[in-house]
Length: 425
Ligand SMILES: [Fe+2]
Ligand SMILES: [Fe+2]
Image (cartoon, rainbow, N blue to C red):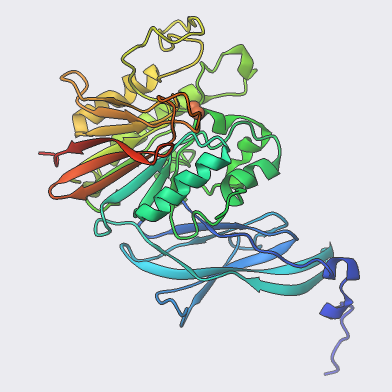
């Protein structure tokens, strides 16, 4: 049978437009996001329209590497700013080596797409989470795009080499342009923009991470949790996590914005109050998971504190929300979250809450009524003549039968405080 001639033009790569072909594809440093025991998110920047993938293997030579393309089924991810890949079906407690790659595509229209140059990044590595990795985490918070302190904080964490780092909110100030989010999360203007190329980061929203039109699209910069981690009921809880890191169960909760939803400044565009309720139901269920309920240590993380010893001292006046949830015009601490989550913590033996938001380190020991302690991390300020203002790295590590928390003062380069927690009875 005579072959039918198809009327399809298949131009060679050399037919690409000279102007596009002249642009060199440049890859940013990879950023390890949303880690779990069996999955890892990887995001990185590109400077031209590109298709991307990750090559990964269980050895540093990348022998027998697997390739995972950007995006989901159907179409690949294809973007001129950010590419994202999710590795799944990984083994817990296991180190993998990987590199990111992309191919510049000269896109004229759907039928004129010309593959151009391919670029590959350097080989990096990560370890998945699990009950057998070192019981060791670090926390950074309220970085607020202050690059001097952000660089010092990330260098400190890099030197401490934890299994995982919690970024406990307020990375942002106000994100009205995509370049702002890219700078904050993926390409910070610091000497080592690849701060998370070998360090997986568990992300928690702060109130500032809800601000600006592009923080409504935060998934573009920070990958959400894998849907299979939660039930269908909790499909919208894309930011909560409960993971084992060695002997420690770590739980991430989102305190949301820092004012009542009906505050005039929000113009009806904030819906955090039902969000907090939904997280309470999710939180209760996490303690039905043996690896969480039976962990020797349980630590919860959220941005806005759940307790303040000076509830009436904050300026700004009172807001009457009819339910007494907010005592000030903004939440210096989140009473509605404390009222909902605090009893669940008490019932299930949570020992410590690590919070942020107030930009001043503080330790609130446990009491008979509130059997969990709280540590509040510092802010980004490096002001020399304000001794109570300093960035912190909060390090948690299990050694010699206890969870030792070391609060590193990043401004002075010294240890600010140490706290120890015995294993749960
Ligand atoms: Fe903050
Ligand atoms: Fe905050």
